Amino acid sequence: MTAAVDSYHQRAGTLAGGILKQNAREVDTSGRFPRESVTALGPELLGMCVPEEYGGGGQGLRAFAAVAETLAQGCSSTTMVFVMHVSAVQAIAASPTFAGKAQLLREIAAGRHLTTLALSEKGSRSQFWAPVSHMTQSNGQVSVSAEKSWVTSAGNADSYVASAQKPGAASPFESTLFLVRRSDPAVRVQRAFDGLGLRGNDSSPVSLQGVGVKEGDLITPQGEGAAAMLQVILPWFNVGSAAMSNGLCRAAVTTTAAHMQAGAFEHTGTALRDLPTLRARLADMCVRTEQAAALLDRTITLIERSAAEAPLFVLLTRLASIEAAVDVTDLAMKACGGAAFSRHMDLERVFRDARAGCVMAPTADHLREFTGRALTGLPLF
Image 1 (cartoon, rainbow, N blue to C red):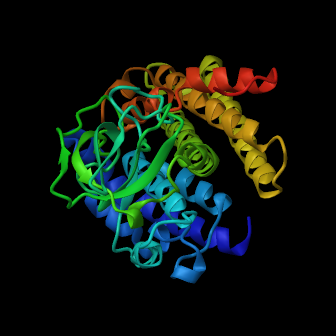
Image 2 (tube, rainbow, N blue to C red; image 1 turned 30 degrees about the vertical axis):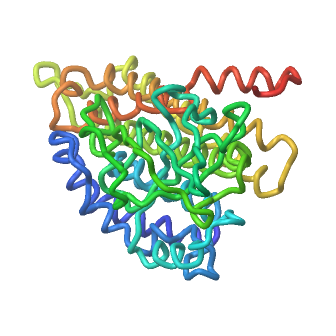
């Protein structure tokens, strides 16, 4: 870990063990957006992956993953907001067309602007790369009407990186990315999020009702949205969400180990850690956690080297991490027994939060299909 990455990692650790952890239970119980925790991330973390020329930290995937893994050990809802924000920032930073790029990135670097992704749609569900909404052109004006689903930070982000098919598109793959301000009167957040896990991430449906799209709002040239989604957004999101899942694994291991050391049978004088079955479960949890973390580290190394196999590993690392999180937290619940089902040790929250990864696009099933196609020489679509 370089000095720069270590600095961000330490800052994330301070926040995770402080304000994020302090607010996580109440955020989960009430299902409210973790405003205090997101604000506490400040310019240092919200702007860490903004290019230096715009006042940001200029950090890459390695620092991003280290921060996401660490924050997740305090509050995974806050971490999901962070991951979506940084993924959207990368689309904006890579844009060759967005007229307000420099100004917006400076606002983000200063911690004054929270952005997110609005890609998945009701009509194409978790296949975010295939929007069914269309841009329409009339009298020289372009507008979009779309029903976006599962928009993280829907009611709290300042802007959305959204998608739609270009005017006259022959298929959903002829899409375009564009920026929409939440303050636009044509934007409607449909309802508050009330989910099983990640209850504070404000992941709600958003309706775009005839949003006007000017040429300067385009994040990609017309028809080039799919390439940006798969080549820019997907690697950052997959790495960030994999790191978040790894953080949930680490939280489960730490909590389980502490419970086993503290718990005891008064009538026999033995501790929970004296039971071989519980020690075996904890060992399995640790192995799965470190395997997923090692795969993510290798993936980042391959991306940094622009290795030919990097896109395959971008798929593999998220699949490994989200499934490890499900298995590790399941073992944690079994190892900790009845205590795990109460809220006093926070393990049941981690258990629920870990399950979001498998249904979040690209889902575990999508990742398996894409990996299988890649390994057998087939195109992804």
